[in-house]
Length: 105
Image (cartoon, rainbow, N blue to C red; front, side, top):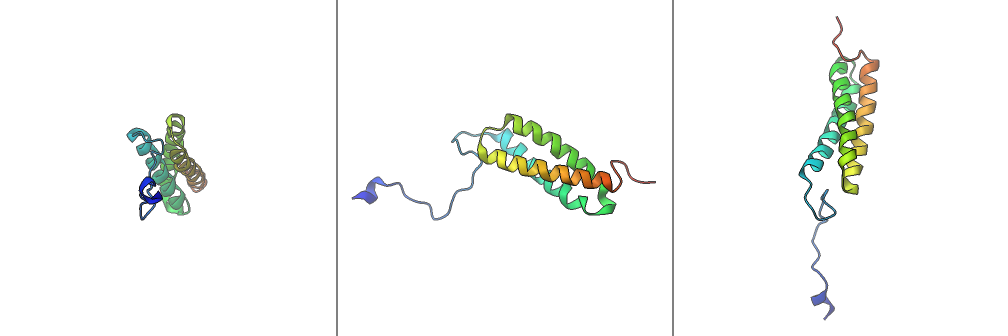
């Protein structure tokens, strides 16, 4: 009767950032926000006319990601944060290369 002692398996893998079993709402929010800002900065960094948004989203995602990395608890959070930081940096660099933080005259 090994099936009785074995825990029931879920039909799908459970995706969570709380791999340690505790709740971390602030860190989860910062990790997801860093990733979203990084994606936004990365995508808009390739569009020359959106250099202002790419630059600011990149800066906010970059420095916010550093703070999120400082207070992160789990490895899953850190994976999202690092991906967001890298994309934020690339988007910020492209935004600065295309015109910087202020709109052109």
